[in-house]
Length: 209
Image 1: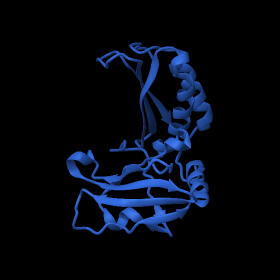
Image 2 (image 1 turned 45 degrees about the horizontal axis):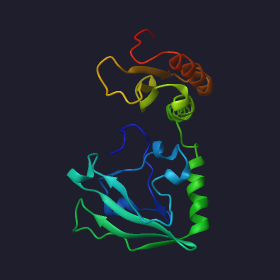
Image 3 (image 1 turned 30 degrees about the vertical axis):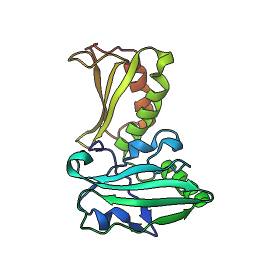
């Protein structure tokens, strides 16, 4: 299940949304959040080792409500999508096996990950916050860890950040929750820069803004 407010990422083949036919009421299990790290960790990344990938769900865990799965692997100069499963409704036909040119597949995956043209300011802020905090909350920066970053399309829009302590079970008052308001009155990059400097100077459990 994906965070409600991150943008869905839906696979298109020859311009056709695969999930629209096989799971029209479902939610893509891949969101823009999943494209923030190294490409080899993205849901659609293909390696020599076959991976069973969840493509969609019912805004619920798939072990409960079902979803669409496919196995992705790289074989020589091809990327294969095979062994489709519909655990939501096995009466609905699943797509045929898909074969892609591996070089073109990698180029398209990189293009999709780099494309920010669709973003609203709150999406840009969430993406930049995730990247900046990943650089400032690793083990070499102490025990602070990012628990969640959530873009919220409220009025005004905001990004909620929750920080905790590495290796410490969550308890009330032990994490740090801060909202970055995205009003459109200041450049997003400057908002994010100041916000990151501020919250990384705080510690979980601090209550003052």
